[in-house]
Image 1 (cartoon, rainbow, N blue to C red):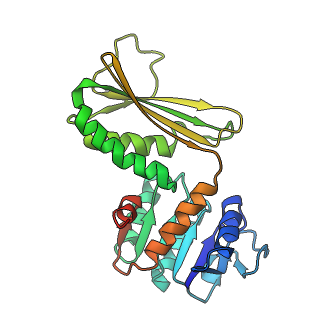
Image 2: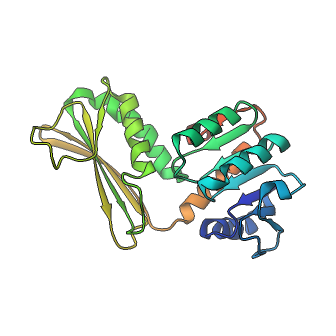
Image 3: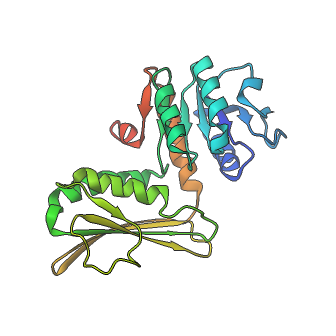
Length: 253
């Protein structure tokens, strides 16, 4: 049985993970990290990773970027893999994760949904096939409390498209002040923020007399917990230091 530690255990996603893990015969949650150190579930909770003297097989992190430094220190000290599901990291923090991955196995994805990561693989192939003949636009829809636009997932999908294109695409976020025709070698973003939309992403390949669309809709954030638990099972068996992602995991499916 995999011994799991949840970082951010008292948050919404931490509690979803706790509930799902309780029904998974392969996983036992043995501890949690959260600044609000009150115990909400049947395992001990610590305000900081370094307060916990124990160890485990893998950590899932659904917390806050401010928790990164202490979590990396604990992971390296105890040699425990971490599945990073937190978003909003700075470039410096991403560099810190990459540097730490030289000492311990780490896993990071901009989106933990299995479906969105599968679409990323398909988008790279579609871009390679469609190439110069189709314009690429991305529509990114989220709830009215989301502060970043475009979302990390939208950028992740754009990166997948760009990898497959035969040219270096420029990302265009705003055309309001641009009074020129669309640059052929660009990927455009449109961000919609409203209501309680959990998450919807649409990638449009628009050609002459033909449009191809890839669309992914999330109706509940539970799908991110499903992907995180699957990633935790994958990482629990990894001993080689490195920075892993959903593509690595899907390659083993």
